[in-house]
Length: 98
Image (cartoon, rainbow, N blue to C red; front, side):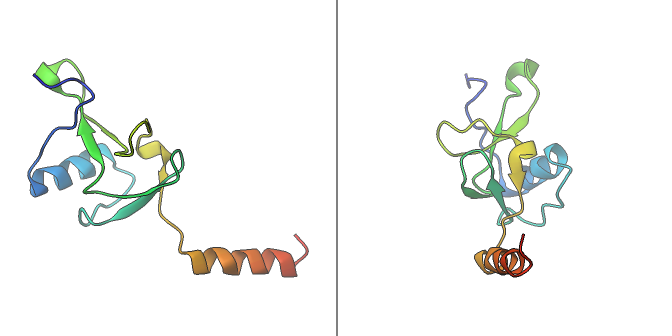
């Protein structure tokens, strides 16, 4: 029997469908889409995100970060920012005296 926090193994199509259903804030074009976890500071892909819960209908399915010890959920994930963009923003703020 699976524990409530043990990831559920899903076929590729089923996992993509689960991501789309459980994380409606993003389009999820593929399992290779990446997000940045603001809790553990890692970039994670749809392939790495874990689908957990749902055992015997006792708990609803939900998504969680795959980094060991990280308890983040989709609300804690943002689109990753390219380092070049961060440098450009830093330069703009410095030049404007911010």
